[in-house]
Image 1 (cartoon, rainbow over the protein chains, first blue to last red):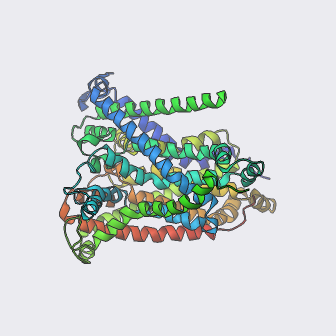
Image 2: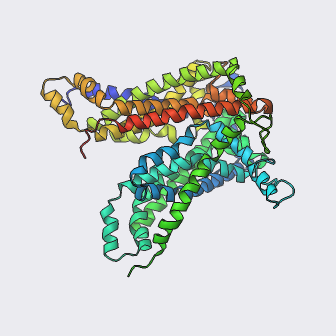
Length: 285
Length: 270
């Protein structure tokens, strides 16, 4: 076995990944941290340290209102997505037999259409002359189109939930698939009723998949820009819109950087608190 | 005595009824895009007007759109190539060598997935300025390498974990150098995973909007073009025709990659 001779070569194999996925990201984040304590005036860049951007943008109640709204929308999306996809992942893992692979492909396929158009399609579904309104009109249930279906936080939750459904099915399916089936069978042989069996064996063992899915949904949706812009209306504005406005129209990069930092720290703190409480609960149990 | 307990009933009746319903919900937006791309009317609203292929004709004649599509292809090919190389080499080093940083690397490499795309986009824009470059297709391509590298890593990690190291050891015992073993044994046995990684990265880059939005210069990619057109109701049906074409092409790609993955060499030892 000649392995282990060339440590330098082995680390060199890690270099492309380390540079692209880690170094670039960490350096970029460090740069926006530095930029967030600069003056807006580009000529005065790096001349002094100031918290002006935090005072003028982050300290405003509007930012915290929009951040809270974004977190609530993401939490709703995460919960809705997990509830809707868990049974499907369960079905594929335990009931689909030899059609497993086919079902997995069928479920991920629609997510390869343009993301923009998929979100946009919800305007067609929920819009004033959209699918839902036309349908209800045809049934004679309503005279005038319902106005509350689109351009509000509700339509953002609906569009985002749909956009992330497949992301939830896959990790939960993988976790369920890994469960040793003999555990479930022996619990059943020992007299566990199906519901108790599910609650005490299947559900706890699938939790890592559920947690992974929750993380992969919650984090990116907090900062989503496309969905609130297309279907959110004025009441559905999210932090992504605030950040974009600073880098776009307002052209105030330090302000945008400060807002980004506030979002990263808030989300990071929230996740750390949740991970901590999960650990505490597990230790107590 | 067998009593139909809660989960029994849930499994038998509800689950078999729920899964098709879920599938319908899943496909609803894509089906609507398909439906309205053949609708003989400018407004994307019910009732439908009639059947037409007019929008597909307009699509084929739109040079700005075709140009954006070419740009997206170029960016996607570049990003998928570099990200797959990074993911393949990185995953191999993590799985086969006992490097001290392996564990940390596996976690940290997911950073691009764990930071909201808009923050990743502006952060890379700031980095681009800091090193003195302007916005361009190259900037988008490198940005997409960052977005795609963790995806490639996860595909390649699961491949190398399943690949029996005895095959590589046998080659080396027979006198092959480490480098030769990698190219003659490891890579050929991982071709299907490499193809799957490439396709996953390419489709991700091809559809990526937010990072491209911040890094784009005068040249547009397809999602940027689509975004620009969403504001103009009159070109919308043509955009839906484009969406249908993209859906068809990607469906074919996804089925192809799944087929590749399944016919991958069955040498895994569990």
